[in-house]
Image (cartoon, rainbow, N blue to C red; front, side, top):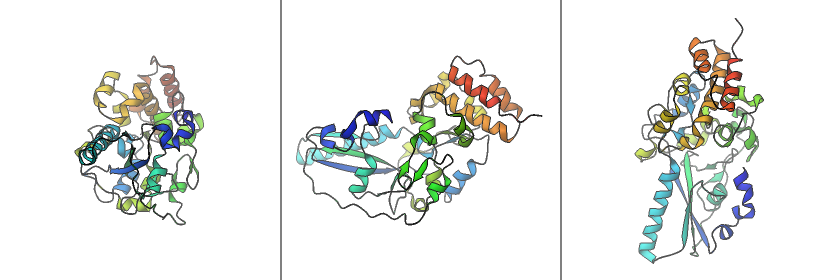
Length: 310
C-alpha cells in the first residue's frame, strides 16, 4: 500500500517514526460482539451461500475500532503517567506505518499466522492491535512460538488466492483491500470471486481452527448495528449518500464513501444475478445505471451484463 511504502524504514524503526522511542507497549482488543453465538464461524460461512445477503466483515459491524482502541490506549497512557509522572508517548492503532503484527509477535501477544494476521492460542485472531510508543526503557517480554503447523486452511479457502504462501499476501487480490483501500474499478477477473462480500472478507479467519477460542468483547461498542448484518444487497444499494452517512456515523465503513459502497454492492448484485435471475436485483441496478460516478456506472453495467440469457 502506498502510504506504507512512502514511509520506508520508519515502519521497522520505531525511533525514526517517533523520535525518542525506547520501547513499544503492545495491546490487543477482542472484537466479537457480546451476543455472538456458539458456532459463529459456521453461521458466518453460511452467509456466503445466500447470494442476495450483503456480507460485511465482522469487525466493521459495530463502532469504528480506531476510535475505541485509541481512546483506551490513551487512558492507559494517562494511568501510567499518574504512577510514574509525565513521559513521552504516542498511541497508534492501524493508523500509521507501524508493523503491528511484527511488534505483536515480538512482544508475546501472538504469532504471525499463515494468513499474516496475529494469532493467539486463547483468542484466535479476532482482535485489534494497538501500540504505545514510549521513551521508557522497559524490560522486553518474550515472543511466542508459532502453532500453525501443517494447517493450510486459510491459504486454501481464500476466494481470490490472495494468500500466495505462508505469511505472504498479495494485497492486490485481497477482497478486504479491494473493497476498502482500493480506489477506482475493481479488476474484472476478480469481481466474480468476490461473491456477496461488500466490505472486507473474513474467510481466512472463519476457517482457522484457532478461532474456536476467539473471545467475545465486553464492550457494547462492537455490538452489531442494525442493517449491517443480514441485510439484503438491494436494500443497502438503495441508500442515498445522506442515508449512508447517517447509518455509518461512527463506523469504520464511512471512510470508504458512498461511491465505493455502491461500487462494491454493484459487484455483489452482479454475482447474485449470475446465480439466479431476480427482478428486484435488475431493477435496483437499473435505478443506478445513470449514476453521476463513472465508476459506479461501469460496475452497474457489468453487473447487469451478468444476467443469464432467458
